[in-house]
Length: 143
Image (tube, rainbow, N blue to C red; front, top):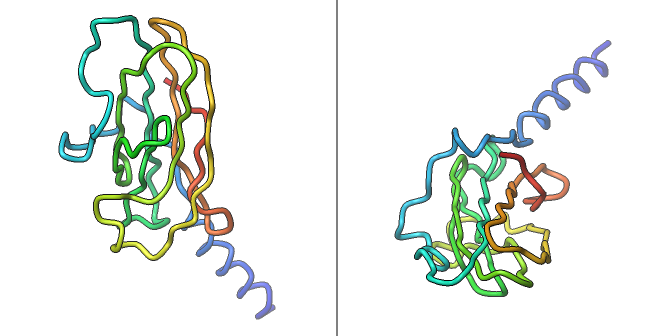
């Protein structure tokens, strides 16, 4: 019986470290000081990418770097979102190390790159989720 209790406690603790999706309308915008690229309204046709970081205990004090076309574009904390106005055509969204305060977090496991071809006026949603086994994960999201 003690083994079952230990297994149950371990399962509860580990599941508490997973993240939960946050709808874009409930996420708060990251401050402008942590939004580096694609923030101005272009005069040429553009598409919009909205990315939201999940809530949860997993590396909650750490921020995640967002990269667009290989360049550091934003730093997102838990329950934050960023909106980017990107050129139409081929773009790549990725996540990685936060380049603003990168020494605050020792947990650096990240994965995910999303190459995409975007049309004028198109809006794409993504989320940064994660768990203890896989780290931060970039995945398609919903409006």
